[in-house]
Length: 356
Image (tube, rainbow, N blue to C red; front, side, top):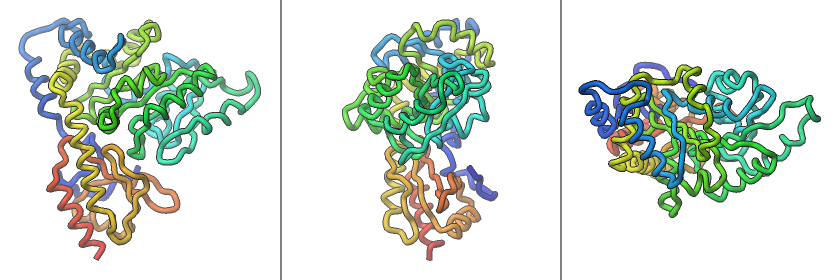
């Protein structure tokens, strides 16, 4: 992912939902947790409360672990299910393959990551089948886990039926199923409008473990690893500690989840980010030289733009990424809880200007 030239104007960023500050509910909860002392390493009341709230979202008994970042939230549970002679199947643009600096391979002790193509950032059951025919016996890594990204790296969303079909294919071959939910809240918001609950496209569909993203949803340095079968989480706390992910002052991570979950802000802010992406997409439709690489379903818009137009916008201080180079350059614009309609209007007006 290529960064644009500088300078970047603070309010002109569509680079990432990571660029936004803390959501007010997370910040208020963080400040409220500060006075006085509390037991360390997760033995505090905030952590217990946050874990209970997270379990409540899925209407089932869960084991929840808070870690610092998405790389650990992905790599550690994959390492929990996979040994060094296993392989991890994922989409070719998934963070597991493209953005974790080999962390899944490192923490598993050498599991092979097998990245597969799929339209609009999604995998289909038929995409997996050739993997199970590769190699022969012990001469090729045994498939150990399937990792799905929800919402995907192309801004699309798996339906419960799509997740269920993929999980069924994976389980038929003995694989565990991991869901990379860095933008899980955005997917949950989209699917809630279709009458689907978070449980419907996770454990009820066959997902074993979820990496539930807090950072992109408006929190700071906190992600949740959610095991839907407590037996699968046996001794995972040791893996968290060994991986350098056990916070001594965990109440500050947990408090943010409390602030976001108890108020419903996690879903409300995700809905806002999604709505801003839809507003942006609607304003861009029909502009000369502008095409969509994928139809936006969450908070990301992926565009094919004339290179000169993108460079002109960068020069004016707008911040967004050249996401992927294929036959044509694709540019990614991400909306967040903090994206304003005014910022979208200004961006579209300037794009119209540089397009002439």
